[in-house]
Image 1: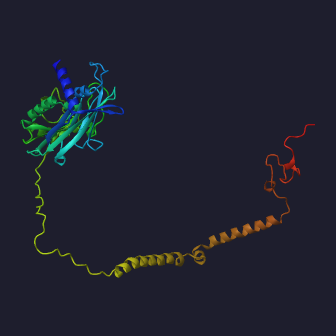
Image 2: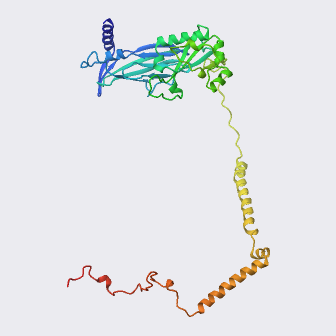
Image 3: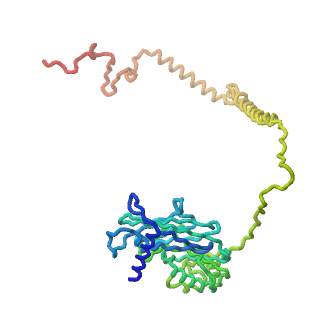
Length: 399
């Protein structure tokens, strides 16, 4: 009961500090800005609570017990999508959404995130701005980092603070050191994983990267050794004795364990900026003009060399085509006498047969005559017909 009263008070205060506008598709409620400060190298998680945005809607026709479905959309101001290091996750319209990510040194500065909540029933909307200020971490990047694959959870199930603390405690036990913190959380789908089948108990999986300034424990070193990789290739468990540390809340895929040691990179000294005023060494003397250059040799080389090469190619090709041809005399000399005799005999016999065929007094074959019907043997002159056939009436006269 007290929580409901506090929620109503918060909604009234938000409406008073914010504003209400009438949009073409419904009512737009503006909530006050929310400022967030974080450091690089650490996980950032902000929960967009469903109850807070439900109380901000102005619909009075809905029942108090029925919670309307709400979908969240977030983007960087003046941009169509979120920045590369930030993601938004919402499993369904009846659950809260999470903004999560891990900023790097390239994202140092202020980022304004615009969140828009839409009521799926009344088409009302509520907007809020998140002003995220990112500062460099004073401790720098942790030199020892490890990435675990949790196979029995989805990303939104690992984002709550209580679950993160439970995971950090389990990792601290395996690491054998308390200086452990989460660097980044990534869904397995964003790393190329497959969408699980809609079967109870199947989860997408979550990659969790943790870091520490302490060295890896012997258990972690053994789990990522080449012998363990060989066991994983055979479908067996790696060589480690710390499996039960995460059970039963987290199912770690030990074959996907990755250990990384980040060495500190020396920073190069930056440029030394002066006062911006030239030293008092007199007036500025521009450089003298360059002497004129003779471009004729370069022009001749560029023009004559390709022409010379083309002329040589034409001469060689002409010699091959005209001077290297095999003439009739050369061909006859290289052909055997018996082959020439056969060729001459064939030509002579063909000419004799053609002359004998012309001298025969026999009728032409019927198949060579025009309009010859092979089936009936009739010969029909195509020009024979009624003289005025084209002028005959289409409908004959009735007698």
